[in-house]
Length: 273
View 1 (cartoon, rainbow, N blue to C red):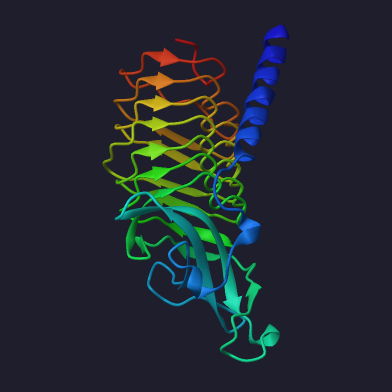
View 2: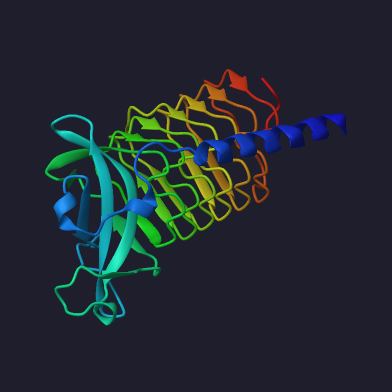
């Protein structure tokens, strides 16, 4: 009983810490986003297209995906925030007016490879935080880093594939994406760690396949993924931190650990190691 009490306390502290970190963000304020083309290169509005290249609409109006970003150097940028809009003739005096209405209908978001003719290489913390309009996500092969809580709380996000170019994934990057059913990793990548709470509380996720290039699975990385029925761990994995796979309630039996695993933390489906 005492051990369970300490375990519950540890879970609570981890979640509180994650939420606190998700509440801190440097950079632009979402409430200050512009809809004026003159602010380029710190803002860009793109016609939203799905993975097949088809223009996406809602109620007959074209959806626009809007990005704010900042330069890293003369050739690269990081995305700092995002939202979607439709050109709203009903609320504009004429078709040319810069007037928009918020689009709440979920749609595919294809993050661009370039903004203001500079290559997109990073997504900043909280950049897509709680954006309910995202149902499917396509990430560019130029992307190297996804920072803390970048997509946390995207409640309608259903699928994501991490491209091989991503070498760093932040804490809580996809935390609490409660509709996420499909998570795919590239066949090869320099990414070696799935960090703390990266996919915690993704309660609709049914399958987890960890590729061999992943060496460490951080604390609570897949905590409370209660619908997972299939868990596959490849040779090459060395470290499973505390609570990494805690509360995988739908998993009938834990798979055998790869021979390369040297550490298993507390509150996982296997004995501590």
